[in-house]
Amino acid sequence: MNTIHILKNYWYIDIKMIRTLIFSVFFITTCGCQNSINTSPDDPENMNPILSHIPENYSIIKEDNFDFFSSENWSKGLTHDDDNSIRMLWNRNTGGEHLLNDKYAGYILDENVYISDDGLLYLENRKENVQGTNPVGDFEYSTGWINSLQKINFNGTEKGIYIEIKAKFPKGNKVWPAIWLIDDSENRGWPPEIDIWEYFGRFFDSNRQDLMYMRYIYGLWNDKKNHSAAIENFHEIYNASNEFKIYGFQWTNEIMRWYIDGALVHEKNSGFEIPLSDWPNKKMCLVINNGLMSAVAEEDTIFPNSLIIDYIKIFQKDD
Image (tube, rainbow, N blue to C red; front, side, top):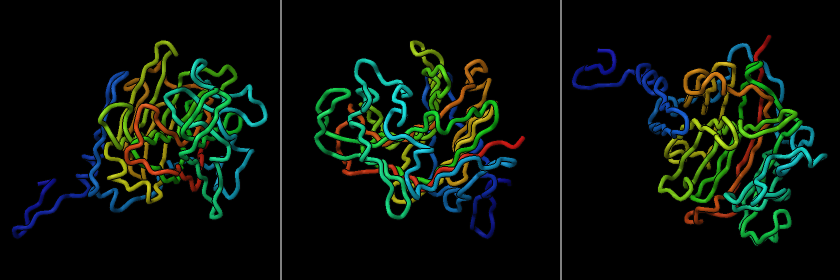
């Protein structure tokens, strides 16, 4: 028998077979559908993590260990720090320079982004009253965002890219932190958007909780499509608010792959899950933010809370 062996009334599971079963199965849907990935805390890959999965024949092209805040790599908030005409595309009716849209509850402030003495980047959610000016309004929370608009960008379809981030994610029903990619080409548009790691303490006003999404949004702004997969019980499985995990993402002209501590957790394929004509083929930059969801009550959320980054490394496929 391949999977279960019987020996003197004891049985054990063939680890190689279990790994194959777990990581060869991906919950794949057509456009607009959302999937859930259930990973057991007793998964051998979690008990013996590889930690890193840098693809063969990839070389590092950018590294930030956050010994200081590098304005060469990052701007705070939603705009470029030297030219605020270079900006994320916030909602024209509900957003502004300090708020992407009214789905978010936190007013974005530069002071919520800081480097600790031990070289960690903190993007912090705080419970405080803020009198907003852009957009105008009274806010009960503040939050921290950074972007790499016109500073760090790449096109994985032209030349394969692998991103590795060592991080701790906050938890709590209201939190909504994310690491994502947006269009950074000359004629910036939306979509495309690749949500590499997007955590929902509670998914909008549903009963679904503790979800880590891996999502690609494509199409047109008035006819967008969405291919998503989610790891359920994310913090329960990974203890990711107390322990640093290594989050990997690979993007080539054929595949997108997601890794946690070196273990493959999700994959999207050009021409299969995503139509060939909709595969991203633009320069894209990074957005990293903590966040709070307007539609969700605080419930078990503790303030302040932070998305904490130890390092970011970007690798590119060799010629």
